[in-house]
Amino acid sequence: MALDFAAGCLGGVAGVLVGHPFDTVKVRLQVQNSNQPRYHGTIHCFRSILKQESVWGFYKGIGSPMMGLTFINAIVFGVQGNAMRHLGRDTPLNQFLAGAAAGGIQCVICCPMELAKTRMQLQGMGEYQVKSRVYKNSLDCLVRIYRKHGIRGINKGMVTTIVRELPGFGFYFLTYDCLTRALNCELDDSFIIPKLLFAGGMSGIVSWLSTYPVDVIKSRLQADGVGGINQYSGIMDCVRQSYRKEGLQVFARGLTSTLLRAFPVNAATFATVTMFLMYSRADEACKPQEAAPTIQQPSSL
Image 1 (cartoon, rainbow, N blue to C red):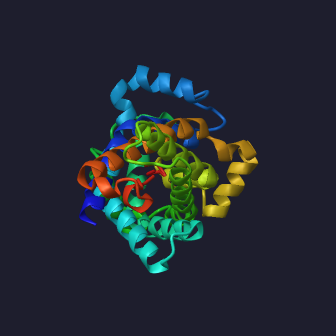
Image 2: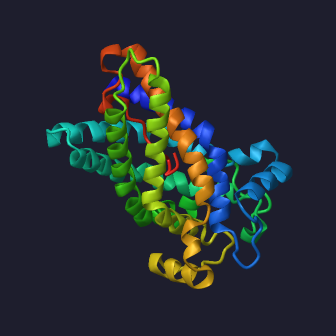
Image 3: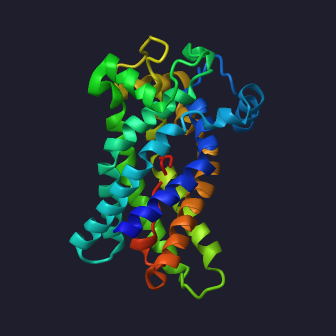
């Protein structure tokens, strides 16, 4: 358990460092004003942030996911492992159920963390009236929200986070288990690293594709009210308004950036976790439950 915890933390750090710029682009695209879009697509958003805010603009809000890594990975690895032992048999269905359980429970940390990350990432966007630095850092963001809105405020978007994470983590662990078995990961295989990178990357992509529309709604709800005006009264109101104004394509807003992020993030996370376990427990390094990484978005993963 201790090795799983340490490996998960290291893998999570690697995943956040690789994927946070893509996540910043994803959130900006998801929540921008459709009537007067600031960005015309993923590439334009990347270029605009780099030109206007420098490379550090991509890492706005990174403190929040970094702060939550230890707790999230401990929860995910602990719950998933215990759930598999409780379920008994190592079957595809049990892999999905154990992953879903882990994803659901870690929402307690994930939701406030992503709320702070989203608010930090929106600083500098004129349509959200946050051209200046409203929050000093992610912790300051959560403290300010708590003082103004209490526990309910820092858990804004919790329902959509749970709806996203349950199937998301389920599909992630299921895909990872299936791919590692199909690829016959063995410690003495000279191609084990490319195999692990591929398995981790593809697992992340499958996970995001399974829940992405929910993530769009979650981002919009968590961004709502930043400028002092609330547009949505709830989840279904957000869905209706978003669909009415922008059509079905709104639920794929930022998907390109997310998928570009999903593969390297989860590949890096998986490789880091596995390499750590390979050196720590060479005889157990390739077991799915020992080497499985978590998702940054999302997410996360």
